[in-house]
View 1: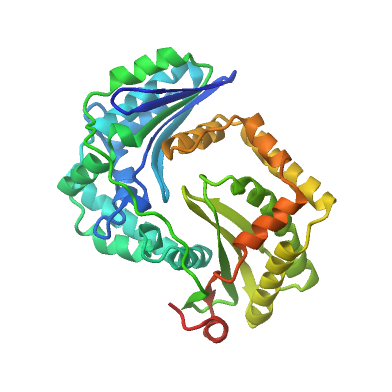
View 2: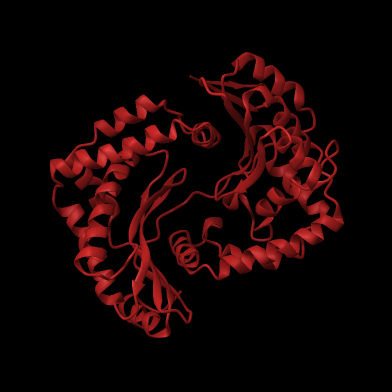
Length: 417
């Protein structure tokens, strides 16, 4: 059962009581890419790295890791578009230790200048690795087109590399003072724990985080029309991404889109892989943010097939929005979506991540049965309706591949942005 307490400071502490021998804990902050100014871009990611490199009580990366790993657990961090999360999983009997470690690195990081400079070189290598991940680059280009003019539309690899030189202990402290505040934080514990006991435990651990008021990120907006962004690389295949707008977490349409996406995914695979042999690994995805989301088709495609491939994708989009799916498609889609939900509910990590994100973004957290009820209510008419709303001519095309294919896409969809 989920319980949430909001302290007078603004800090939210949530527990999900479940009978498991494992437990998970996380500290989530609204400090992801969308919260960064142009001169800060990459700071959230860098901060995720550097806080794990030492604190007052655990003054080295080795001591931070060993404080939890010596008890059979793990500790780490992750930064995405809307949040930075510091997390741990461990045996329930040892859950107090990651609480101690995480609160110490968040409140009393060493921010050693020598380690900061060393970490800059490691992150440069990480971004260089991203640069050579063509699937990821095509995906990123799609985001740049969808969210142009918004922090989520910034080419993070390039901007973050440029900003690395300006990251100092002072700039890190400034960033933390804006984003690592009580109003921006959710502490989530999953396991066989008592809520009131953990509210007290967490409250007693925090004493040095300010709460001067969080900065509000710009609102995501749809950009009309078709745009294309491509990059020439010497590859034998083309990484292609066709991106449409979608509802965000604040929109009830997200439940119907999740079911529609499951139907569309099988249709796309059947068409592009089995019927036409255009791609070995095509697929669709639905990624909601707070107010809007992205609905995508992506995969590696045969060089020289891009006109046919994009044509088939758009044909399938039109079919989904113009004709009602069969009842069997709907039943199968609901079964797949519900299965994924039920399977994830078996993991303390999935439970932790799901609820922590919703609470952090001020989205009403729903118990699994409530979510399943929303999916059960989706009709074939709902699938057609949301497809018609979102699979429109405001799509964006992005690709990484041989020059001939990039030129072909430019002829179809305009010069690369």
